[in-house]
Image (cartoon, rainbow, N blue to C red; front, side, top):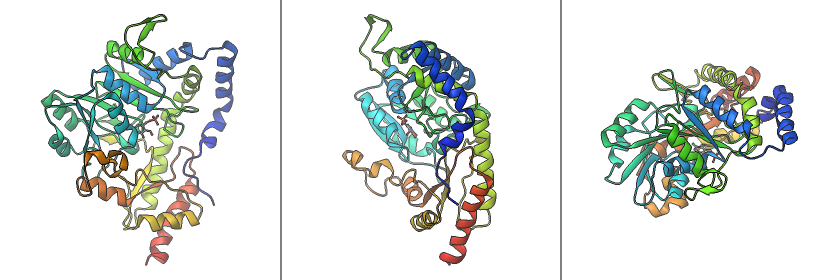
Length: 371
Ligand SMILES: Cc1ncc(COP(=O)(O)O)c(C=O)c1O
């Protein structure tokens, strides 16, 4: 049996007609930029999320940069984020002109450690970007408390957690702004790049939308310089179709995660992911922790099972951030996690046969291969 890491064809096949119709309609109308499909998607996404307003953008990285700039964050400012995130979170901070400040993750979790955030605050700190990694929401209360104590903005990175909830409230409704990615393999993915910024303050979302569209509201009036960071209407038309299925797909991801949890429960070497208290995960990824990650990954590959690493090097150890002068040992929890993590195949339509095969193969490895 072959188990791919992600199977987008299996996801799209049952709704292929709906998607094809949506695409044809856009082509028939020549409706490519800033058209009604985009406006409707923004409204529908705001309704689904429980946000006041949403503006589409061209990617998650752009969403983060736009959010920072819409809040007036730039040079001489510092923004704190988790060191185990995907590089776009760091890149966006740098692109805004601000300085990236990394913080460690809480032991036993994959998300920001409030104590480490606390230690990283200086008089230049303007914002914290908690990253809801792997589909696990960050326990937001602690982060929000720190932010209010030091008068900092909270911008959520929800790229990997569309639909995750903390105390029953969706990730992306806690910060002043929240940033989404619609990279194709995300829980809600476009047919290419895409993103969105959501918020409770319509004025701020309007400013974000203007920044994403050359600083304008009206066609020929540019109130300031911005960017071309718009979400294509064609992508919005696809996303409108897919948004209707997102909750159902997230439920299927949770069911698959439960099968993994159960199938791996008797393998002592494997630590399965447990959502922190009051957190509901949408399992963008199913990430286990094991002591001998590389050899297990190689064994699974031999057996036809694809795996991933998210991410093998915390950002402070990437050449891109050598300028920060932070070496090994600066963020011990994230560094330890990076050595131990392995992402197993995860997608809404992964079958019980496939998750069962993955679990059996991992058991076989620990029983017979690595005795
Ligand atoms: C945590 C996180 N933040 C930001 C991004 C950036 O999203 P995009 O690839 O759409 O720019 C990603 C996606 O890779 C991500 O995983």
